[in-house]
Structures are given as structure tokens and as C-alpha cells.
Length: 157
Image (tube, rainbow, N blue to C red):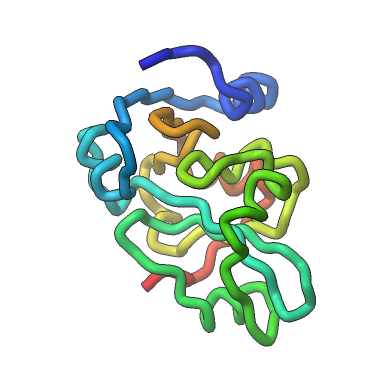
């Protein structure tokens, strides 16, 4: 697995944010639970980045542990929308600059309102995609929230 710096790592370096990079061999299609196992991490500390669109047509980013699902009602409430839905996979790359499976809340083309699941708020660290399949970064949830101007809310179920 190539251990070159990703754009996410360059953003973290530029902002002087402490992180630990992790690489793994994704071996074809891969779900978050498998990624956590390959990293030797508790799945409650490994997060996926989900991009949604509200009834207002605004986009929102939610970061939740890999074994949880996004609670659409709670997520809509957290961002003050009547309803939200997941964007289509084809919209992800042009909107964020990231592919499915490699989407990170850090370094998207545009800064969207971001919410981290409350379950990760008091963890020592969380692990999120480094913008490339098979590459993750581990950092303090407070640092991540500050970097992407995120709030915490109970949005995972």
C-alpha cells in the first residue's frame, strides 16, 4: 500500500493539527467494520463521512461510527431542516472532490455544515478517511470538530 501524503494530511499539517496516519490494503470492496478490523481499531472509534441534502437543497456532512446508520430525522433536526436525504453516489466526487469509500470531512472542495455523532465527542481519538480508500487519519474529536467547524449531535443509530 502506498504511504504517500494525501490532501487531507497536507491540510492537517498546514493547520498544525496532530494526527496519526494509518494505511491498510482494502482488498476489493470494503465496509467500515472490515476497515476497523484491518486497522485493529474499535469500530466505535472509526467513522464514515456521509453527505446529505436537505429539503432546502443545502448540503450537510455527517460523521458517524462505521457500524451505525445515520438517523435521518435526528440529522435533519440537528441542522434545522424539515428533512434530509443521502446524495446520489454520482454526486459525491463533483461535490466534495472525494470518491465513495474515500470521503473525508477534511479538505472537501467546499466547507459544508458538518455534524459529528455525539458518541465520539469524548473519545480520546477518532479515525476518519484520509481522502483515499485504504488510508485513514486518527485525531482527537475536538480537533476534528474545530478544523471542520462541526457541532456534535446524536445523529447515529
